[in-house]
Image 1 (cartoon, rainbow, N blue to C red):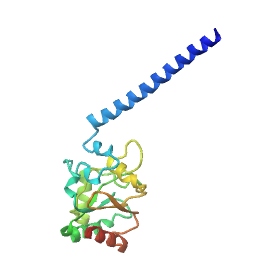
Image 2: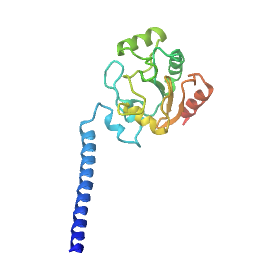
Image 3: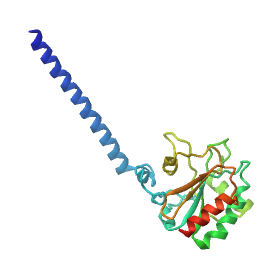
Image 4: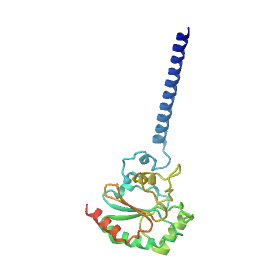
Length: 208
């Protein structure tokens, strides 16, 4: 009787484990299916592709219009989390100069406003746009506000960029992106747009 009881119990336990495993697989599958079919914004799908390219993303521009980063395929870009009320905000001037100088060679600065650090980008999209144009004459592309910090609300673009092991620790951190959409290098806020190490890296990327 004892032996028969033990066999019965073992069989029931096995069934229970199979049921749990099956439920877990269904839940994960359903979750992935929901993400891929519904998405949460135009740039959700690329975020599910860790090996993808930065140029796969489709964020919105600062004025709310859909944008497609595939327009920058074959170009070199500098991705910067910008803010209007930061000690590094004067870097806008250098970033604009860099953009204007190298745009004819296939280069672009891409600005992603963020309020993550010190609440230094509290304005609306319109206020940010006016500030950038009137104060620094910014003409390089600007995109919607982004959350750079890791967590549930992180912008998919920064989830992708964070796979390098580097996320912004403050405003005006910079990612140099190659023509293939892969991250070449990361530069902290203190590295100015005219820093020799940044300029040299851009020149090398443009030459490849």
